[in-house]
Image 1: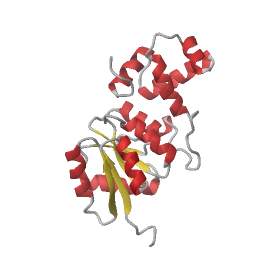
Image 2: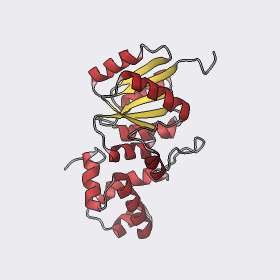
Image 3: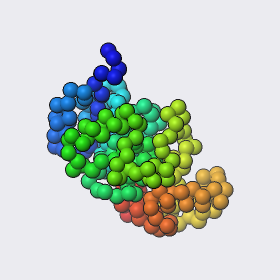
Length: 222
């Protein structure tokens, strides 16, 4: 079969069953799309990929229990970098968009977006590798250094992973020197990573970073 004419394999990952089912049924009506599977969170998605193989495009909810969109996007980016990720959220928040891009997403849409626009977005992100719109602007892409080289997979020392390892420590009472000792890094390096993390979260202090991370579900609530 001509690869240009084959149907794109689409996965939808969202914990809201009715929304997911309605969206899947609507998109299944397009002859150029095949709904490969649906899943209620990132862990369930991993199991579906084992059964059905990786999709071409994933519509990925940000706010999910068990394994949220941030963790799921990072997992996909590491293991299936060819899969395009379109993040979905109820909220228009640049901090959310920025973090999803840092974790490996290729675009962002609000959940209220009409089916035709979602279909066009799926095709666009598959063709071009990134979807630019009112949420994912050229400025934001430059700030998060996207798109990444397709032939370079993020490893454990990738900057995005450093951000998320640091998050586990900045919520404690440890000083930067103490955090540096635990991470086997210099204090200056930890402060540099913290500055990058604050930028990603759209904040300017350690306390604000913790508060924002909890609001976004990146850290547990007190």
